[in-house]
Image (cartoon, rainbow, N blue to C red; front, side):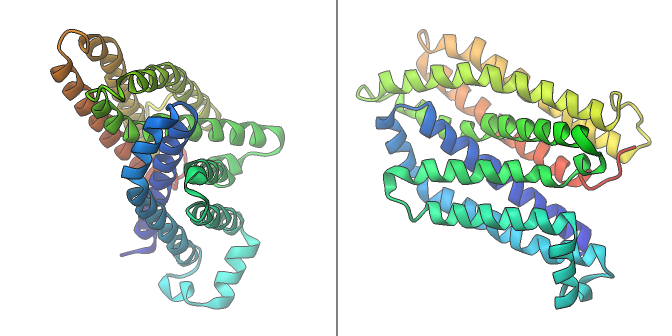
Length: 294
């Protein structure tokens, strides 16, 4: 595998893991009643650990992959001096150090008392997402515009990750609607997800539009440009996700009172579809985020 493909894969696995962990744990910590949050957490703690380990491993591999790209191939990735120079003398290296710190925080979160683990994991993964702004196209700017772009990047990934990641625990919460002892709390969690989801979707779209204007200063319409083509595809996929979210909220949720079995099945399928599309979006960003915007 060539270094560029390896780095794209590492970016995808790392960024996807952070988004899933951030959205899932923030939702369980802030919006889900504790009684059912504990039930969902116990069922998902091991998958969350595996996701964190995959993301951490991808982060580790990304440094030699980036070194190979900056240098002359994989041979330079094994050169200690070259790795040292990339780590301490480049923007990529400084960003990697921040990611290494947040990854260590995620590992330490699993050592906390059980009642605090999801809170610690939400904090660590959220900081990891914020650290993604240290690289990327914002680094091409100077002064206050660079800081504004980075702040917008942080808003974009946190709201996008919050939307996408929260869908993961939402699926078992939908199942808990069928349990009389959990129904009231699960309904409350569903309402809170819906309310927060409106804000998250709006902020994702708005911050994405701001990013596009900061980078291209226009909408992506040049199909001869790989960057603009992939960006346009990302925008289309996000629009499909937003449409699915609207259908889930305003078509399937009202069905719950009339035909709960079919409505909950449709909501679960819709949520799974949103997660799958979200993974495609992250994959696209992992690729065109390394391209020259033009």
